[in-house]
Image (tube, rainbow, N blue to C red; front, side, top):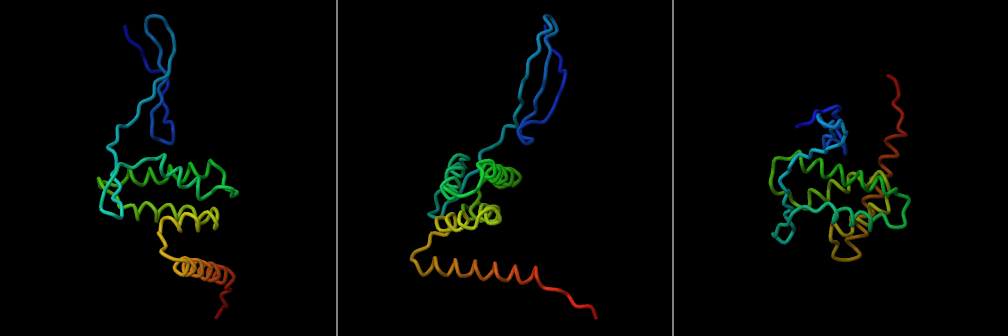
Length: 157
């Protein structure tokens, strides 16, 4: 005959709708998941080519950057989820890889500085050690400025 919906909830971070259903004829209950069909986002690479965004590639690059660091796997997954969410909210069919890399760096920086530097070294494609050293020096300088700004006390007039 048919079935009726007993319960409906969002699932998997809002990417799916979970429905608990009951068969009208036998009373058996079962669960269905409904996913929004999304069009794949194309990543525009530095060399001008484009390829479909692959979650597992981004996840793998983050895992490499976070190897042997105190960054929980759940945090790495969360970063990838946030990047996917940001890409799905955009109306553009193509997104430059530089935007994705920038977003990842922004999300990774507060978690672990070493993982951040590792990811940046691949993302920024440094040509030599001097270029890499400039990046690290700039990052250290910014960190010191942030600490000074936090410790700055405003004096009353």
